[in-house]
Image (cartoon, rainbow, N blue to C red; front, side, top):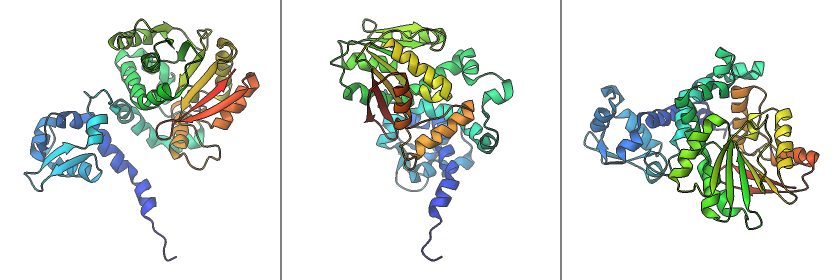
Length: 340
């Protein structure tokens, strides 16, 4: 048929070319290296210990993908970070989001190679497939991998948490508990933006030392506490606002509902339960990232899945929540809010 164009099919089908080029650049620390000064392709190869064959294709590909700028042509041309790369991909930048990309490169990239198997079996395709242990058991057993995972979650969540901390009306509340709080990032952002709030980051005991270190570094120890516990086995700390950032999607429906019930029980009348996720649009047509994140939950956990604001509202109504709203955050992410 005339007028049809296969370019979108080819762009998506071969999209792993671009993905792996960026992931390798992050792994190699290219953007951090170029933060110091622009370099020629030969200087990049020497600094990163690359094969001569990688030059100039690798940096030029990153120019074409708009992750690097290049001044000039030929061997004397000098490469530099774009403004976005300098801000988000330099490991020394406070806005660094490369942690999630480092984890994607180290773990997810290979596991997604088994998506077809996951679609056929409904079973996880990560470390669980080989060891029989849950992904969290594997991650939490290795302090280095745990820290990498915490950094990854911090990177992907930073923009959403900051927007939520700035946009949500905390004037009626005085306390917050962030369930699965990891490094204490959300609690710190809320406390910094709203000094009247007292915040608790609640996560497994092995995570508490990481959170305490980050809270102290932020100078917020008087406003933010880190408490250890198991959010399935233990009651949640009571607070006016209960938050879960990228937590609820990790679980099957039974466990999702159990966590929602726990949040309801920990809140006072008028309290707010907030989930921050890549919420799928209610018609399931637009948020491609949210839908693919749900496929990632299949790869990671088998029976876990992402969901829409309408799904969340339905589950929350079952336990007694009565009022709901949705707040758009960064990119494909949103906050769904239920009031007791």
